[in-house]
Length: 447
Ligand SMILES: [Cu+2]
Image 1 (cartoon, rainbow, N blue to C red):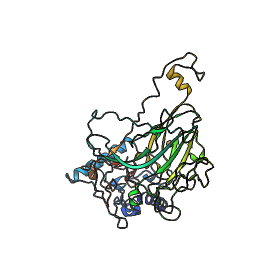
Image 2: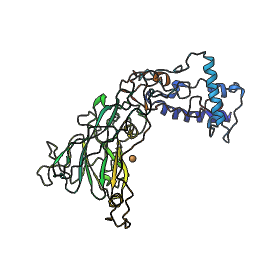
Image 3: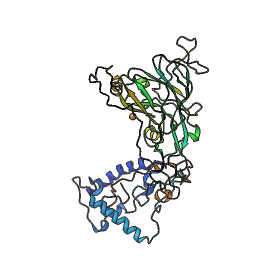
Image 4: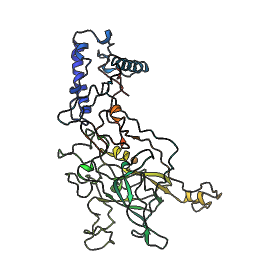
């Protein structure tokens, strides 16, 4: 009986882990979808599943703690799924195990069952769309002498990602201030909002200053349109018991040598002006101490202006990038606590190209830097920004078959969304490769 007692102990720990996972999107305990294989059937004196006797490990435990799933296990698991499908005689197994959580209205995720959770993008013919030009930000070089200044807003917008798709809802950056022209006047209009724009081109040792404004929608409209695992630290409940909002944002310069106040750490986010939440900004949010604003109009004012403040106004924060490093391609992206990966996936990322005299010498055939005595001219230019990404788009015709628990998108619903073609799809049920409830240890639908 020692084995049985140990198993029960382990089983408790496992249930706790599963409960944590299961609460994603549903808040339901994992027990609501206890395995049908029946633990009692294995350990309660009955014959082991499939007539097999599990091999105990060093702790005397059965396959529960199996170290890894072999290729043979995977093949056997696939064969079991095939046999089940055959037995169902053409009737779909999909969604058979779905149970609605009465407390939330969402389906309880099916971690070890036969419910799939993947997506086909709609059919997208290749080589039909021109390469999109990523827009380049235009620096204001006069407002903060010695620095390039940009006002960058974060907005929700939509863009056609492929001619076969309707517009996809995205979140991303747009410059809102005018750039400086050759005559020293701010007359150069910034480019309109576009996916993965605007690219900032910076020069070594010349700082970039940014006023970043979070203009995402507020209230329910501020929620992300891809699945948010609210059990993830910083994505759900905050210190007062209320949930953090999903429209929090801050910019981080990835790869930059940036002082901490402007690093865009996970605790330096801000919410849009007018958001109703106990958490309007991260606990480390700081403004740049030598950028001054009118307290009423929030316009930039010179240092020493009476009443001036470093606070650029509700929903805004200032950032200072030193650029004290050699030429390189970096990117700036969202960094908000608990939802960074989701914000970046929906579009909150753009390039940041730093050039220096060495690179310029290699472009121009000069030797200002001293590093190009041969006056080589080996670079054509600073180049064309090119970003390669992998995205899955919702196909409204197939999504509820391939992912019956899809509750998100721009038309979310309970227990299923009314799927919108072209929405971004994002994986949300983490079906493990292993299944401790199965005699082989492999999960039929796992990854
Ligand atoms: Cu990064």
